[in-house]
Image 1 (cartoon, rainbow, N blue to C red):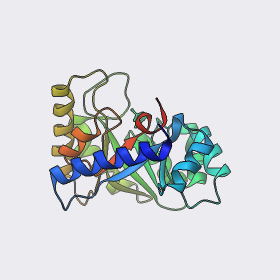
Image 2 (cartoon, rainbow, N blue to C red):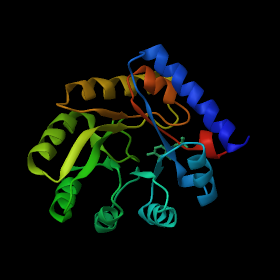
Image 3 (cartoon, rainbow, N blue to C red):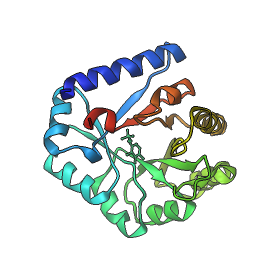
Image 4 (cartoon, rainbow, N blue to C red):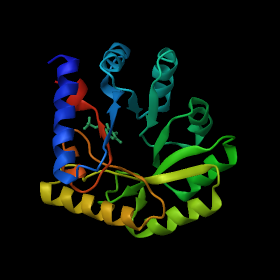
Length: 218
Ligand SMILES: *Cc1c(COP(=O)(O)O)cnc(C)c1O
């Protein structure tokens, strides 16, 4: 299928899920370009898509630099190592989704000259292979970052459904993330939902979905 058709089809599905949840609920789409070529990103831009997400700093840098003449909005989604903080800050992402600990927040805070918008990544399903703050510490960590890291502007949460989870397990994870989100002061972004589960995520109140393979893979 051509890119425009894929985007249109995806937007229709998002719209349907959004309306089923609430007419007043706005859902943002971040197109995850980790599987995409520069040409595909340009192609999606030509269809009106502005927000793109990458997992690796190096690839983020390469794409953002090559496409710097386009008014794109870049999101950093992947695990961030401490030795990549300066590079990340140079790239000025619109939003860091993968702030995964208080230590990382403090390290960013000491190096940042300008504020960085970020989401606290929560490891909802408690999976060892995934980074993120454990659910039971998330409220406290969120508050500590708000109190001690003025350069980090926390805007909410990023969560992922369990890998290979069945629908009930994914729903449970999304519902836990949503309950946590509702307890946070001034949080506005709940980033959850990928190609396989974004409709379910929207049903649980996600207002930002990160979709890659449904756009870029066969
Ligand atoms: C790869 C990735 C996505 C997109 O996943 P798809 O299943 O390809 O839509 C979303 N979020 C994160 C953090 C990712 O690493």
